[in-house]
Image (cartoon, rainbow, N blue to C red):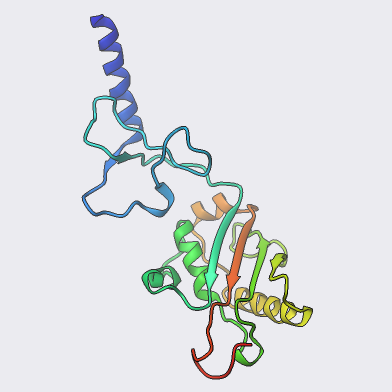
Amino acid sequence: MCVRLLILAMMAVASAAYAEPRRLRAGEAVPFSHAPCSLLDGPPCAPYICSLLDDAGPCMSEIDHPIGQNLQVTVMTVPPEDKADWYRRPEHDLDNLGDLFAALRSCWTPPARDVARAGMQMSVMFSFNRAGMPIAPPRVTFASQDAPKEARDIYLKAINDSLNGCLPMKLTKGLGGAIAGRPIMIRYVDNREPGEGAGPVR
């Protein structure tokens, strides 16, 4: 019995040392790319790893977790008030997915109000290379069903112009290597209402 307890204790210490757990302080937000979850949860998730003797939880692993195959981000034309920081382009090279998504959100310039369509949604998919340039032009994967072709063309042009105006994305070597060739899907939502700014949104 004592031998089993000793082996379990040694395994717990080894696990804790490998994971390098960092205790979350009271009130601290869980970092974007390290949201703790159960080992039984489906992807994407980053399971936390702690010592079996550690009951003060929660803790989180500082090891590098693989990036999922499908990276998705939503871009609102009018950012939610409580998420304004998500729409500010970082002033440094993009080092993680949070930085990349903030840069993509900050790039968005919607169509002029006189040609805009209220509630219009369009999703595009593309990939970056290691240098932060698209491998191919964005491909439309979804557009509001009731939107006429003219509206779709207007929004696709706005999307292409917005992305081209931000290129190249200044990725760190680590992030560039991690996302190169992986599909990135961006969903654009024009949530402007009549009266927000000059001119109508039809």
